[in-house]
Image (cartoon, rainbow, N blue to C red):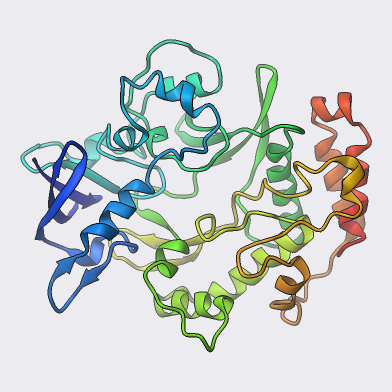
Length: 372
């Protein structure tokens, strides 16, 4: 069967797919509109099939997702890869979609930015429904290992994300990271706390709209060869600046500064990036910081926090060594009293922590303010 991948209304290239396996690339129409991580040889006018396959495989719920097995039991016998293609491969992070070549459907009629979508899967993921559900949803293509789901709140597209054992803390950490960023003047997506049944989740509004896409840094680094004479930090900034991301250095420095303060353990190349206009391909700048929940000793026992020194990412595993990259360029004043208050106030909203380990918020706040 022949299919075409589109970027919004622009056909990019066609390909043959049999039983969800890419057989070959057929015709190339507008290669400049392809996903950045899909390799294109301009001289030979060739799209690299393997990089396209890699793009599609990365556009699915990962094997590490909480409750993945329960989800698989309820998606009509599909694999997670098949699920990602179930409703045109649509996402709420970009405008790429796939249709059969002769299908007359148009982007304006199906995209999730302008059209409503089923909330069945989201309700199922969060334990609100045990029935079969519609696959007309952007949750087919969501990444990350924590429970998460896109929901509709009036006209807003809201991402709801859970936490993990033993302390169910990540949702609160997202809120803390946002509040600390706000007092430091750092661009971080706004997170709030939402109770659903007995559990608490973080919620944030989508910062991508029908005219833009989020391009993770991983899309850049996986297709470029870093010279031996420069650091990965300098290499990433150089590659972003080549693409027109003029605020790359400042955006990354501020992100690393925040991550240093909150002991973020999981700032990998897939959870920061830049925003591009899908019509003009004009780069809009670095995306706001998001996905900061795996921080603040989220899974460390209270007794171990005082001496804890968790590994970090993405440029060095040592927290202080990574901070050395930016310390001479960061001139923001750290108000430790305000940071302490934010941590204590937000973690106090956790009924679980208040019941089982009420001193944890103080232990974490003490560790943070003594380490910055």
